[in-house]
Image 1 (cartoon, one colour):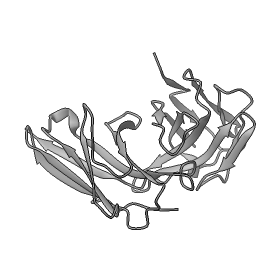
Image 2: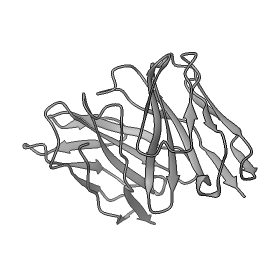
Image 3: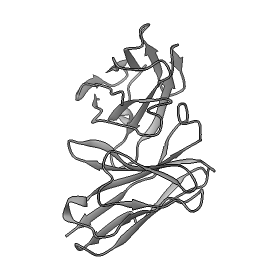
Length: 111
Length: 114
């Protein structure tokens, strides 16, 4: 299964942008890049996903490298409520059903 | 409201006493799956189901059973629980288009096996 690599932890200040990186060097051409986050004491929630082009939604932006071997989740203005564990996973024809979340990145937001 | 509902949310049991954690979704999703979350190990997939009567093993299926008799329900069965199954469990569902569909997670079930 294609895997992703993320830093264990990152720190940011409130109202500043945050760039969360993810490496997926073994990504296949049909794999979508998905991001989820898990707030304390809750189940993971969907944030954003993309295939090749950069994507924006109300929660975040996703920047995908041209070779698709890495991506970056961008929170434009971090708030204290964005403190969570962020997971980057791949979903596609071969990995769409059997999913590996890994440990994700613990984001700390300082007031 | 679209949701995935798990029960019980908290359970303390003893070794060997069979238990079932239920999972139900109201979004008519074909795909459902179970995960366990342990400190330092992230989320690991136990079983998944692509549709009614279709189930398959994830990364850590040992000691667990599942069934998918109805589209909305995907119970997780521990026939003879052991202490190493003490964990936080999550159920998730998504539309059939698993290569693009968003996963919806339940709130989790914290299980302690003594």
